[in-house]
Image (tube, rainbow, N blue to C red; front, side):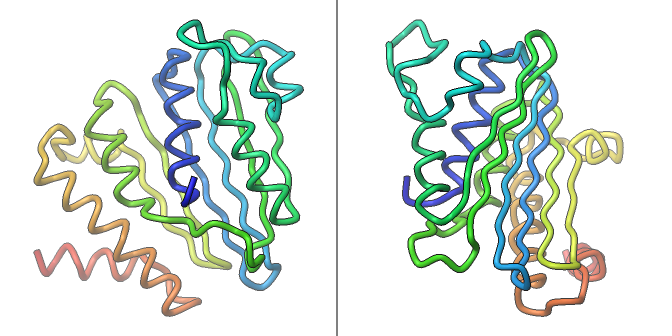
Length: 195
């Protein structure tokens, strides 16, 4: 896959297929430590221990539509190519946690990609699922919880609202990268006041 956001999408879709109704996505970028870590945690059915213990093996899959599952094996290969690794922890009936680690500045690391569009698509396409997203760049952190947005009156089935959420994510992440040390929260307030 050309960007890591597509790997995130694939892992999240696995959680949705496993019956999850809450999915947490965390991206931690440490420019100082030259580290990128992506964690996706769901509360679905979990996966068999054989698959959790061998995520790089595409021939161990829970899919019934085809006998090969490439998602985790491709993510594992992408992480290892960049001096990283992939770990999977799963408990039947309680969910799965997938953690991919990369050396941030590695020449072979795929770009993170359009995380904002990925999240927007997941939110509008799965209104019955609660998504929690957190993203750190060194000391700055951005977080979003769809339950809080809904409780605050946001209609997450409205394409206009989703476009605003997507812009909010994209603008905040750009600010965090452009101005290290300045949290996105202040920018968020200013962007919403401008709308």
